[in-house]
Amino acid sequence: MSASIIGAVLEIGTSKIKVLVGELTENNRIRILGVGERESKGVVKGEIVNSNNLLPPLTAAFDDAKRDANIRIMNIYAAVSNSKVSISSNSGKVPVSSESWDIRQVDVDAVKEIAFSKMFDNSEFQVMHNIPQLYTVNDEKQVLNPIDIYGSTLSLDALIVRASIAMIKNTMRVVSQRHIEMHESGIYYSPLCDVMSVLTPEQKRNGVIMINFGAGKTDYAAYACGVQATFGTLCVGANHINSDLTDAFYISNSDAERLKKTYGIVKNDTDDSSVELSTLMFNTVNVKIESIQNVIYARVEEILKIIRNDLQKKDILPYIKAGIVLTGGGAQLAGLQNLTVKTFENLPTSIGYPFNIEDHEIKGNPAFSTVCGLLHHSLRDAKQEDAESSGFLKRIFGK
Image 1 (cartoon, rainbow, N blue to C red):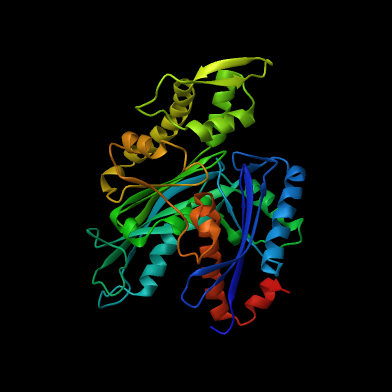
Image 2: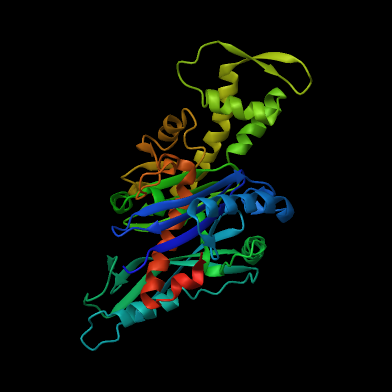
């Protein structure tokens, strides 16, 4: 490789804005060059609601990453997810074109074109990603790669990820105010980034569930039979736990955040000890720790059950052999792993951290899983384009 492949990525979360600059090493690992992280403003449940409030911390995060990397960011990828993203399924079928009935790339391209061409009534949404799943040969044999397999017909099941045009345009507009270029093709659905960051090929082959607990939303994805089986976003996250605690005990949001991090979810060995809380009524009350943990438990259990019920309805759970991977800023909530095991009927559960990253502190922080996965995507795309055009780096970055 004649020159380093460099990428810049952005995640505009409900609680945090993250910017990463990284380069692809010769052994296809990622070296982090710059990090920018600031408290997010003007974002609710993953959706930009006030760009004027968002711009100052966004600018600061860009400046931090640019200063670390000593590079001028001119083009960036972004990760998004909220209720304005929908997942649809579609399929296509074609006759094999060769007289010998050996399936070739032209047949794969033809069936993809049909599977990805589903018509939608709602013109306010546009396609973000077309994701091939299993190919079927002669309506009976399912394969991951049909090239050179003998058959008369080829079918393909696919997932189509669509997003609100307004959401995409709002993201592009706020970034353009920093005089940074962003193309629609550079906007990725967050769960796609998470699975790139924290799931191994072996886990995907054996069937696995990924759950990202964010502040304003919870993303999830599942692999079954070696393919991406489903994705989803719930507009409920860790901030809702704070709201529950605030409503239950009349305390401030900052105190609720402290209680959540300190006590987590109720455990079997909880005693009768209490904690003194200052309320918004300017008085103090003694509250049992068990009561605090029960409030947290109820909200998290609700989130996990919604995800479990969706996967049950889609008949995905029987194919999950590698368990569940929890990630995101809320993944380290005390007691979350045990509750997840219980809710999903003893599926093994672990915390997922960004991998394939050279030594850097974000490697041990699950809150960076989305933006690290997006960096993987951006560098992969940049490597492919760099192979096609030697001028790619000059168009993307300047010093």
